[in-house]
Image 1: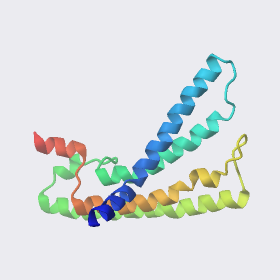
Image 2: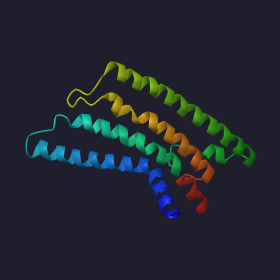
Image 3: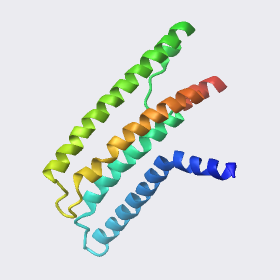
Image 4: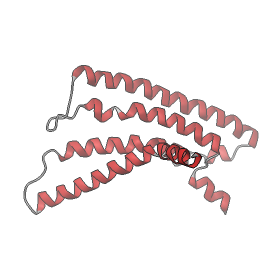
Length: 168
């Protein structure tokens, strides 16, 4: 029974990757179909750009938490790695505070951004997709990023570059 619960939690932990992969698949298929329809059938999808925009936003925000969790987010470690070990520990705390502060700020700003879209009722011109729905993933993503960041710290996840350097 415990392995069944663990697999459910594992699936839930990878939900961001699953969403990003599914949306990426939709983007690839629709873009390919758009090219075929435009050049072979001379009948372009007029709505394709709106869906592509939504897909790209969702891919970026859905995959952001996974990037933190796996150590593949943007990080400049070279300077910190040149410091003495005691200062490296202090810098880890400082960096953590900065990361949480920046993501917290972005989360707060995204709430106002989404509220603006909800108040205005703004939507895409062709398909009438509400912009609040397109960009609403940002708030969820920022929460996922914070959780994933602390998960990676607790698990001691290293970036791929740092792991490669350690293995040489």
